[in-house]
Structure formats: structure tokens, C-alpha cells
Image 1 (cartoon, one colour):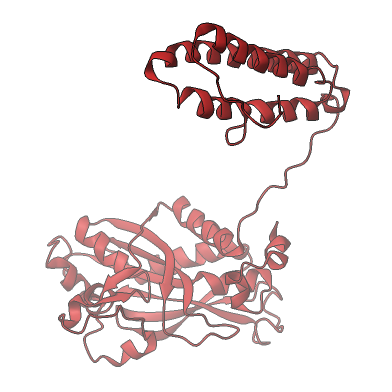
Image 2 (image 1 turned 180 degrees about the vertical axis):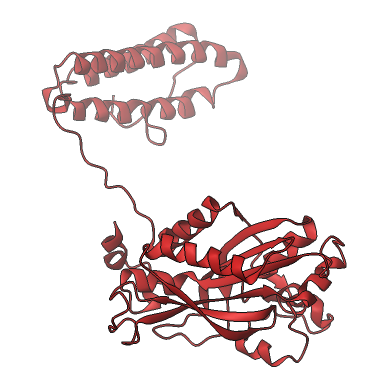
Length: 367
């Protein structure tokens, strides 16, 4: 009998079926005689019980499927017996293997295992987690929100009215086919994580203490320090009698936690539509101790973030849905910082595009 061909049955009587299956059984025995190595066992397994080209499948297709209904039971019984015989021979070969006959495949349990190289955090994620942990230790919770926002939540409710010149500094990426909608309902990619502040205040009354890390989008030309996609961490604290001193103390403590206890902070007047008064925050250069170096442009100080007291107009928008935010009764502060910029400064990265390239040569430096 050919090793590849499956012979046609001469009939379907029990005697004829017994002769046909006996011939196949002898073929199985001949194939099993040489099972002395793991390779031979695997070859036997593929030859007989392989899912696509195994001979058991071919026998089923040639004999069982084409048989008349009256003969299917007789063929099925003998087919199951043949299958059990093949499985017994495979089990016996595996038992021999585990008893140590196949020395080439034996496992030496005293031999050191292969090392699995652990992964590591991306410098952006590592910096983000460090910042979030600092504020969580101060009692802040973490807020999240969608990256696709309406113009109302991204701009108008944050005191960026239509036509306000401050919108030009946050030129955004607009979702297509929005022209027929009212401006406040048009969908855009958020330019900051500040909309989450509005969502949070609308959903819960004060007190609120949250930090909001996340990805943001702006229509910026890519260069060494700018990217149309980057990450921010913003914070919001609202309660009774919150003052600018609370803001200064919070940020001073956070910067010392992040860069070391010797770091100092200083505040300069600035402008943001959603805070009043507003300030830019500088830290003393953690690399030269304020003496002046290339990283701080020899000034001894690095501008790192913006902040301010929440503008009463912002509370006015929120109070339309959550009356507890009466600007005459509560106050709060907000701040925001670029996670990418902090990561670049901490790890000496000179090109922001490296953090989005997926280049293992770059990422392995942080493993």
C-alpha cells in the first residue's frame, strides 16, 4: 500500500472493512517502529493526526464521508479503534521521552533559566506617573476626559469667547464637516486638558481637588521643541477661602518633590483667560543650583508652568449646571504644565520627536 494514497474500499461488508483497517493498522505499526527521537515522534504525529494532511483525516474523507448511511456505523467503529491505537503509540513514545530515553530533549532543572528582559516605562509615562503620584500624596484625585471636545468646553466655558485673540495661541485641529453646527457645538481636538475641569465641576459640588494628565493637540509645526501632539498635566483646587498663598505653597512643594528639596520657585505676573490673577512659575535650575548653565540659558532659572486663581467667569459658566459654584461663595486655583518639556529637561532629550518615534535605540536608554 502506498504511504500517501488511501485505497478505495472494495465493499462495505464487515469482512472487507476488517481487511482494509487491518492493512492501515499494519502501516501504523511500521511507522511507529522508529520512534527513537523527538523528531521521529513529531513526524509520526504529523503523518497520522496532522490537522491538514494527516492520514486519519484522509481516511475519514475517503471512507467515512463517502460511505452509504448503512455502512457509516461500521466504518466509524473501526475508525475510532484505529485512532485509539495511534494515540496509544504516541502516549507510549511520550512516556519514553519523559523517562529519559530522549536525552537530547531532556530538561536539566539545575541549569540557569533564560533571562527575560523586563520592559521599562517610556520617559513620558515615567514623568507623568511621578507628577501624578506627587499630587496624589497631597490628596488630589485623577481626572480624565475625551480628547475630542466641543468648542464650548474647550474654549467658551473657559472664558475664551468667540473671536478672543487668545484663541490664536491655541490653534486647534477641527473635526471635518462641522460647519453647519453652532460654533459652541463644533467638535475639535482638545488643545489642553482644562475641559476636564469644567466637566468635573459640573458633575460634583465643591470641594474639588484633581489633577488631569492627558494628550492634547494643537496645529503646531513640528520642530525640536514643538509637536502637534503633546501631553499636559493640569490641576484644579476649589473650596472655601482658597487663596494665592495656597497655590504658591502647593506648587513649591510639588517642584521640590520632583526636582529636590533645594529647588526654589518664583512667580511672575502673566495672562490666561481662565485665571485672574495669573502667573508664570520659574524654578531655580536643578542642574547647576542656580549658578547658570546651558540648560537654563545661564540665567539660573527655568520657566516651567502657568497658574492662577480661577476666574469668576469660569465659575459662572459652571454654575449654570451646578449652582454650588457661586463665584461669590467659593474660590480656587488652577495650574498647568507640559509633561513633554519636563521629561526633556529631566532626561536631557534635545528633540521632542524622539519620544514619539518608537526608536528602540532611544527607548532602551531608559530601560
